[in-house]
Length: 389
Image (cartoon, rainbow, N blue to C red; front, side, top):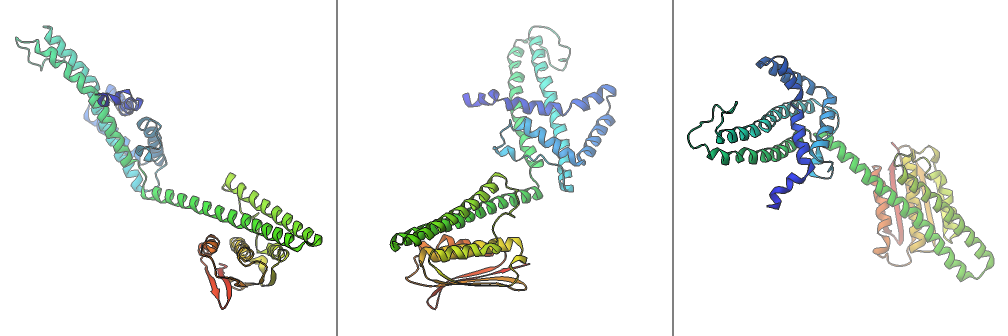
């Protein structure tokens, strides 16, 4: 019983009823001027023409969201789109929606008035009177039964209000819901958000991971060396690397605070010298060769190339330690080639070479390039090719 009465305690039940009744307000004004079939046809025709206006879909969508969903935008009914029509299919569905709302509104408004009047007529007949609008009701000798029948229209009215509201809401989801273009735009927006989150995760992994790796290696080397001069150099390298990591962290946090901020402040291959020097100070013997116009590499390719080089050097320091590293950066006519190689000291642990190498492959794939990583002739090699176009 409580479940049956629950809809009548919700405000959305009555706002849906109001939404239907509002649809017949302006056609009713026409009927006051002249009550004929052609005025009703003219009203329907004007409504159809209004549905072809792109802004009408926006207006109807906002109104439907406000009155039919009860501000519950996380509910299934929240799939009502509040946006102008883009295609003729959107306009056609808007026209159908306006006509359906007009017809449903007329039926509900008529029943909302007629059913209470019918109950009043039944009570009048039961009391022995003759109602004005009840001439069609047979009035015999046993009029007392009409008093019991008077309850039926009153009981039917709430059912009409509840189910007509649910019907018009379902129809709004169907006709004012997202079109294929809207769904595609939403999917693209969601994809962009996921890509941005993935990029931010990679930025944090590369910059912070590199700084921590350098700090750990430098601290361990300084402790083992026992040389004050070497300790000073190690502390300087840790300070410089930590300061660079803080700058990278500030850039990433800026992206989180303002997702539309340009990425021009992120490091590029023109800053590769900082990475190479950091690796050398950490004890690695870096043999670097950079050829070609690095400054002319497109921004996205140069930034991702910097991160790939950073992750590769971080993996060397983390897993191989102070070993010789061969770094080759070649800017060719149509592509950027990155090759990093270092000798293997021990078998590669599966858990230790997972997320970083996966990030390298993801960066290359996003730019339409390719990455090859793995052991080859006693060396661990990272070979990446990124298109410049």
